[in-house]
Image (tube, rainbow, N blue to C red):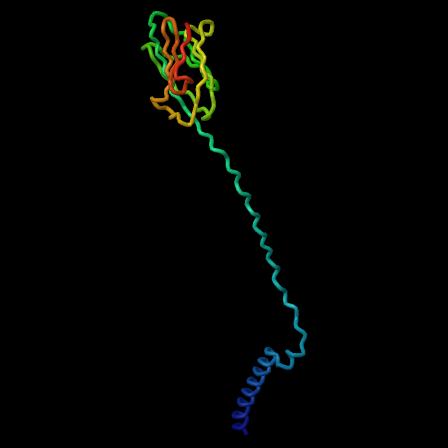
Length: 177
């Protein structure tokens, strides 16, 4: 009988283990009948992701292009007899310029001014107490900024002041001194 117990007992134990494993598998997978009658469990659905509608970007308002003109102002003193430390050139929106006339001539840049504008230019050869030569520049679209062709020339003589150039209406104006 020992041999019977030694042979049958391990086989019975093995059968029991297999039976338990099969029960566990059946419990894990529901039968088709159970699934048909079972109430579906509510599975949490993910939160809906809200994507904001893109805001239309407004069309940029076209800005008018403002052309600017910059003019070279050349000053020459032909009357070398007097002191010119009081000579002053005034340009609207730029202020005063006191040229260095140690060599009888000097230049500066005035501007930028809007094309189409007419800024004022005043020359005081003997300071603000003396004679004044005042002109309005005519800055057209044909003007070439900083060019020799369109430079404004101021010539100070003993008895007169000449202001000339393509930016001067009528090309030249003469003033008594």
